Image 1 (tube, rainbow, N blue to C red):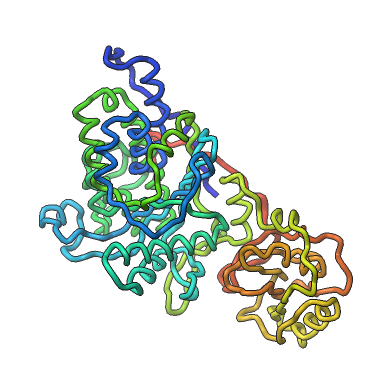
Image 2 (cartoon, rainbow, N blue to C red; image 1 turned 180 degrees about the vertical axis):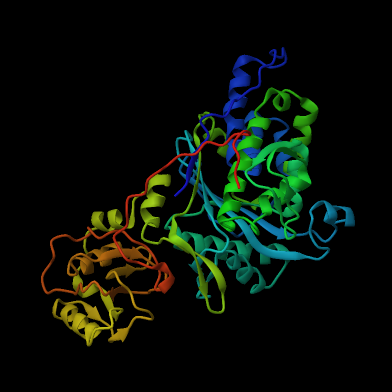
Length: 500
């Protein structure tokens, strides 16, 4: 897991104080604008909203979509999904297509950038969690596939206006991420290719450094090694490139984190903050470039973030398998998530509880109220029927014997969202089993693994002490051991840092 803290970002370049800005106002603006390091769009929204700089004019230019998320209380933990896609507006000019280094067509509605922004209730920090677009995940109602296909399935399967189809796509993408992570997504913000270009253009050239020269015909990225300044067109090429990089999508995620970090340093300089003409240009570009849900209150979000200081923004990528690339028939090359490590990872970055902790804290349900299924993932004779007989003797409701879709190493008790109490009752009779929340099952389901663990007729005395692993029945989850406690190595980026 990569976690980045921007502790070394200078807030201002040395410059004589302007008489137009008081020290108090300068500090207030500095705190909120520091949030830009986490994502150009939302960060600028929060910064300008808090200061009140042309706020109402700014807010009125944003395109809002209803029917995607429910209400959330201001001042509580907020999870905001930042989405970037490849859509091209119908009225784009030939020159704009050239500037974006893309084809003169409608592009694709795949969501190529997905970052979950977590803001705790006290607003003292913010964490951006990146999800590789090719992550192999369970998509509700569509089996397993790449994460960036969820929005496509939802929007193309819906009828109605463009906004209604967009809302359906975002709802399915949000449901997919919620099922994967176990957290609730409160809001979303979407930025298209052209929108990113307009924002980058308003901010001006940014300095980056590359370890190696690149020449990628797919993104248009053609840069020498070393330090160089990128204009808006080149910035878009820089953050889009994945072909020709050693780690593909993973290096692209690093590119995006790096770009946001060095761009933040430029925006936080006095040359931008104290330049009314440039500041107004940035505000206008952001306002006209965003789409978001109709429940997101920008002023409340900005107020919540008023205590954010430099170094309070972290960047992270969900944990992946040691060999993160695999191939799935009918799907193609995918990125494999480390489902065993994911719950503890999410708990670490959001301050929440792991699956195992939630199960441990629940009051075990009465066995007579719990339906339990047993699937044989070990390949042993009569494993499922033997396990079901044990649970039936204990008073549980039971299903029919069946084999798991694939072999599995770790015996795991899976349960649907909200069934922690039922899972605890079952887990008490499967000593040493892992426990996981999964949308793949409608009842508590024990998948027997090759580790040889089986249901027993008496309580193990350790209910709720499973590993807290999370995953799916897909073999690509590679469940093999209790979830490790994720570490949090840090990495600081600045314009003198060179990356791939």
